Amino acid sequence: MSKISFVVPVYNEEKELEQFYNLLMNTIRTINYEYEIIFVDDGSKDNSAKILKDLAHNSNVKVVTLSRNFGQQASLICGFKQATGDCVIELDVKLDLPFNIIPKIIEKWRDGSEVVHTQNKNKGNAFTRFFKRVYLKFLHWVAKIDIPLDTDEFKLYDKKVVKEICALTAQDKYLVAITSWVGFKQSTVEYSTKVKSKSGKNIFQKAMGVASAGIIGNSTWPLCLAFWIGTLLSIASTICMTVFTTLAMFKIYLPISAWLFPTIGTLFSLLFMVQSFSNTYLGRIYQEVKGRPDYIISSTINIEENK
Image 1 (cartoon, one colour):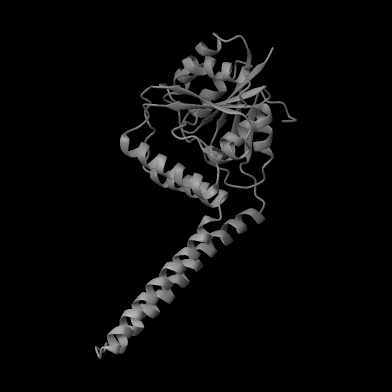
Image 2 (cartoon, rainbow, N blue to C red):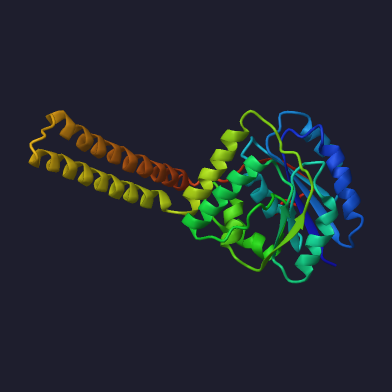
């Protein structure tokens, strides 16, 4: 019998954790598969760890506690590496997740799909959907990766896909791009449910961090951008100089400062642009050569030592 691994990152989820577990278990009872639920406590500061310890009385519930908050992407990678199932379903602690489509995505997997995305037709507001679509289209353009639009952090991976993702050594992994980059047969299950977005005062900062990791980690576009900015500035300078020269031919003379300002301004702006992009990549190389792990495990429950 096939085994399904559910990987669930947890960060300060004490209010919803038990109810989420009960909803997930109600769904699991309707499918004829062995299962395991891997909760990764990403340095929670509330009572999530205590609740997870209580839930682990079910031997199919496995708990990994990280030494601090490493972020959702690192938590997912940690859960992937602990998974022993034939496929992995990535979930988030939300009570309004469409648990009813879990059998549908498993069926897609049984039919041959190795990655099954879920696509919510009723997610968020028009403003956030628009900017997410713009970002993903932009990432597709600069990284040459076919990334499905409007997909959620709720998808299924075959174990061979999980193995390839876990084998990647780059830090700051961005799973949305990596999942598309590794390839394999991919499909999508659509649903329409109003799912609440998690709130938090740093949510915009976190979103920008993940977005920048997606671009910098999967494309050399910023380096090319510096080239195009330099080209445009050169064209602008040439046009400016041509206009000034033409005016001088008609004896319309401009002060020296008029000639110096666009020239010096263009050179300095180009210099700072190129330097800023170079520093971005140097900073990323610095992070890579340190060789630090994506996460550090503090403790585990119901997980074999060799994992």
